[in-house]
Image (cartoon, rainbow, N blue to C red; front, side, top):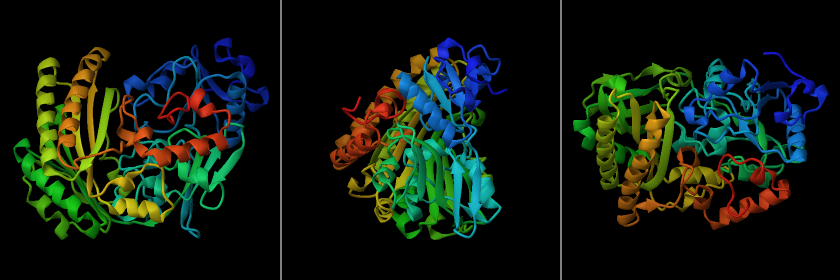
Length: 482
């Protein structure tokens, strides 16, 4: 895949780039265009930009962005791995700035930090950290891109101990709309630093992150698969674990009601983690008592575990999310709705080749306390008055026809769950997690009026021309800033 100077860029890419940049530009007639487009994890993210532009440094990102702003061309920002939300990091007809070449990972054992480029996946970062018996508070799935997870908040194995992944970022390197390359941390551009923690792509292009190294050698974790007849017991275990997690911050458990064709149908899976490698602590007593048809748990490393926590690619994906009080009744209602949804899909998809998930993740109040201690973020999760559940509802279909048929049914099933949660006193929380949200959900609006006002102020300060509101349509935009 050879680099191409400006002279090789056809008019539909607007010929905006300085000839001295020697950028790698992939045009529609390039033999590599199809493979670059198809490298997107979800099929419905595979849009057709005029070209992919692959910078290899922050300086190249700056030059590209300056040229696009000057010509008022729309652009998307694509990072390494798959985006948490399908369809938010590509664009039809505009220019996709693909950060996949920004993959450096530098571990500094003296300062106990790691700096990594925006094009990495979490597996890339974990691989280097593991060499030093360390890790970072990053994503669970190894093939998830670092940028999307961190800029959207980031649920991690260690949230009860260290807060959201974004709360663990020590500094962001950011290319602003005017081409400046700045550092945002607690001492420099501190308002931008806070706004980037959950603020999506509203303020600039982040080219690298610095996070603290956390000691980690051998951990215990994996997946237990339970028959659906034991769903009530799984829900009870999840509820109790969420209530008690603040006393066991090194441990994690989430429940996944899932249909996987490889497993022969609907199952109730539980994903567990213990950071010190202790498998028999009191927090896992109920989990050990669950009946299991499969158990992959073992002593391992976070790097190796990241290969197990993944989803297959090449599906059309639809995701919805909400946050509700840690209430067994709401989880039971969601599990029932999911089972009915699976039955409907099985009747429709003759070969049974689809995936659906109904996921419950613990959000104890201690996570918001960690966020505040780290200087705060913009997500507004501290408004939750008690321990909560982060709910993720998804369907993954093989064809566009199936996806079009299933989307409204998934949305209707989700609405049943949401309405039920809202009917329970203090059952439904207003916060919407960006990394699991559907395009129809008001993510930034759910952060609360104070955070929205703060984000607007930061946006106007660092992007007075509102480039990232007007020319970068992907992601979640600040209300009334379009």
